[in-house]
Length: 176
Image 1: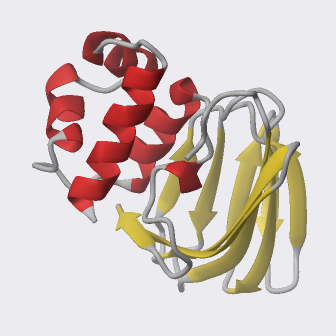
Image 2: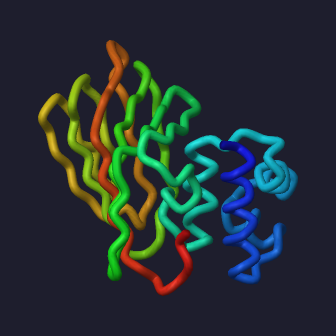
C-alpha cells in the first residue's frame, strides 16, 4: 500500500504543477518526509494524508488504496474505508473510525466547502470545531463544516467508534 499511496501523491502533485517543496510547505510537512512518502520509504499516517490531500484539492479517498476495506492508522486512530461514492458534483467518503482511549485526531482544515458528519457507534468522547466542544455518546450525530480545523477525542475509559462521513464538493481538479 505504501508505494501505491506515494505514487498517487506524486502523480497528483505533478498534475497540479507543484514542486515537492511547494506541496510540503502547503501541507506543513518536511520536504524530506514528503519525498520518502512519494518513494514508498515512509508509511503515511492519517494526519499526513489529510495534510497532503487538502493542498492537492482531493478527498482522502484519492490517496488511499482504491477499495473498500482499506485501512490507515496512526497515533491511536484507525480509519477503515467503508464506501466512496464519486458523483459529478461531489465525493462522499464513509469511514469507520476507531480511537483508542484518550486518543486525539486533530484535523487541519479540509478544502473549501467540505462537510463532515460523525455518528457515534460506541464509546464516549468529544468533537471540537469552530469554538464548540460537543460531548459524544453512542447514537449521537454531529454535522459541521470541515473546512476549518477540527478534532475528535476518545474518552479515557474506552475506545470511541464512529462512522465518519466526509462530503467534498467537486473542484474541477483530478481526484483519482
